[in-house]
Amino acid sequence: MKSTLLTATALAFVMAAPTAQAQTEIEWWHAMGGELGERLEAIAEGFNASQSEFKVVPSFRGSYAEAMTGAIAAFRANEQPHIIQVFEVGTGTMMGAEGAIYPIYKLMSDFDVPFEPEAYLDTVVSYYTDPDGNMLSFPFNSSTPIMYYNRDIFEAAGLDPDAPPATWAEMEAASLQIIESGAATCGFTTSWPSWVMLENFTAWHDIPLATKANGFDGFDTEFAFNSDLVVRHWDNLKAWQDAGAFRWGGPGSGPDSAPMFYSGECAMFFGSSASRAGVLNNAEFDVGFAFQPYYDDAEGAPQNTIIGGATLWVLTGHSDDEYQGVAEFFEYLSQPEVQASWHQDTGYLPITQAAFDLTAEQGYYDANPGADTSIRQMTLNPPTENSRGLRFGNFVQIRDIISEEMEAVMSGAKTGQQATDDAVRRGNALLREFEASMN
Image 1 (cartoon, rainbow, N blue to C red):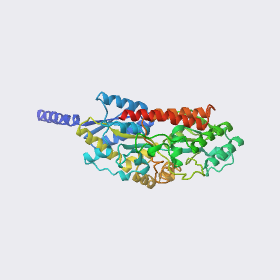
Image 2 (cartoon, rainbow, N blue to C red; image 1 turned 180 degrees about the horizontal axis):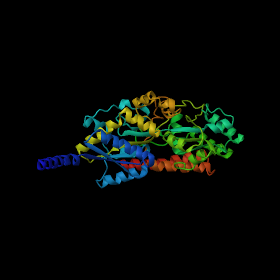
Image 3 (tube, one colour; image 1 turned 60 degrees about the vertical axis):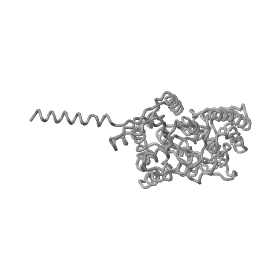
Image 4 (cartoon, rainbow, N blue to C red; image 1 turned 45 degrees about the horizontal axis):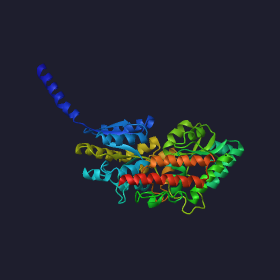
């Protein structure tokens, strides 16, 4: 009897072993460290626990730029992952990598996995579709810049904390009142100046950043943001800085901006909606949330803001079994419960209407006033060709140029006109390099 039991146990083990080994692994390279990385890994674990055929294996690969560069190098060596998380400014570059990407709409269709693009918010989907409206990558972590403000400072300065500035004229007046009252030494600051004070600024005011529908209609696009309104705004930022109303937080990500807000040095801060959790964790004061200001004499403003963050791109070169797993993982990611949890835990946008509705039904917005600011701002109006988003090759480098030219204005080295003219000229040179590489 004992021998029979041991034989049966051994047989069960032998039969079970191939099943475990047969689990198909899906490599997911991403650019989220810290708490966000932990939340991302929890999503993968949720999918892995929901079925036994596939296993998604997340792998942190550094910054967005590093992850994308690494994936490109891996593809050339035939060692590419199945999924790569790419930030929004890398969209044009990824689109240009013909033969390297497996478009999402085709993947889902090829493997007969349910997929409804119309379930996603227009302002999210439109950024990542081809001219025929087909989704090329899977929206994952989408954000948009909003205004955070110190309600305590507003009260101390005699301002209504329930009525934050809606226009740039009101922004100037509120900032000067705050300084004059002694409640703070700075009115406002900003992170990511190119993203906030140019890319979203033009979309919010429904003016073009570039020709060809901001690059959506072709790589032969040319920048056109050296316009009267942008020049006026950059010059205003310099004048407000000289008056103490604005404080430059640095180029690129604007590394000094958030600390100036957390310390109470600046009363208002422009940052990603995905910074919500970080802001609330670091601010020892009552935080308010508001839309970006607009110039009320600009026709068409306010329109809608555009997204930042990243999407998930699928790379070619893998087996059908593996792609079946990728498609099923994306179906899992689309579930309202998964999306709502990701939105509530991180501050990223609820990218589907169902996730937004579920979050509202759960009472999250009632319990967390201001948490819906980003989604209301992005869906204020249907997107136009000026507010759909942007699609440029080499835009990572071009963003650096824009930051450099903005900093030249802040230092007094250039006027707004000189800086925007130079940024357009330098940016167009990189656009032409990218266009030539596509031929």
